[in-house]
Length: 40
Image (cartoon, rainbow, N blue to C red; front, side, top):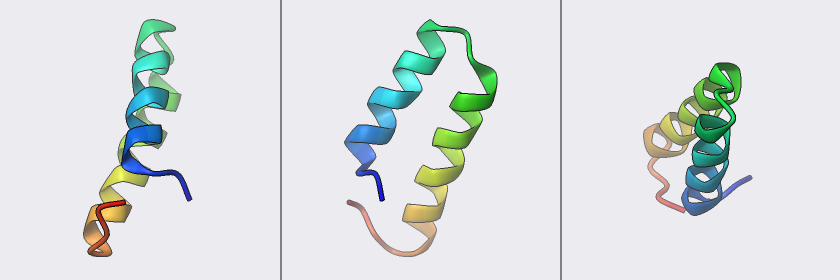
């Protein structure tokens, strides 16, 4: 599983590439981590 920092870097790269699907995936994964009580 990616850490929150990894997800942030992936999100920023996706935003720079204007890749909406990748941004949504990063947000979903981050939300799942938070919902499960982890901060990673």
